[in-house]
Length: 170
Image 1: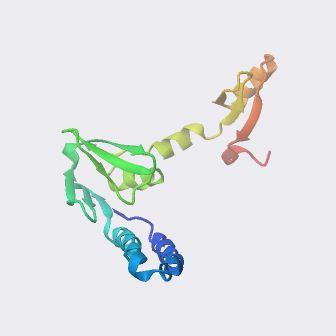
Image 2: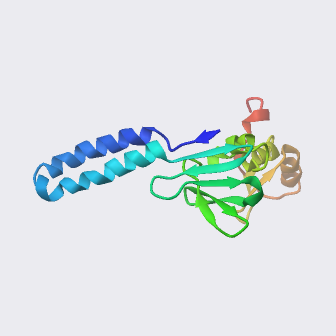
């Protein structure tokens, strides 16, 4: 499976270039060099990619050397801000272009389960649960039965949301 930066970023770069051309037209000899930035950005969007398959992870960059990482060299995957990074057993980290936290279900599928899908696991664990706030302001997940027991015991809980999967329109 191949992960690439969202191609709609090209539209944003073209729009920003059009806007920048208005300012550049006032002094094209002095400001014309600014057009290099959207060109580099568009080249990155069209070039950078992460390929995940049975052999491992292959990463293609625009300016850095491309990397092929077999599964036995990988220690784990992490997220720093909006960047996904893979760590190797020798301590190196590589940014994964086109991979976001929301890509985890697809990563788990492409890696044949070698990368855990914590999004689906958390969703399944919370299925049928209610998010409530206790008297200390802490949000917790409880089952509808636990909610009834706690409120019957006099504990003050405020409902924040209820999982609609088993909600039956309530």
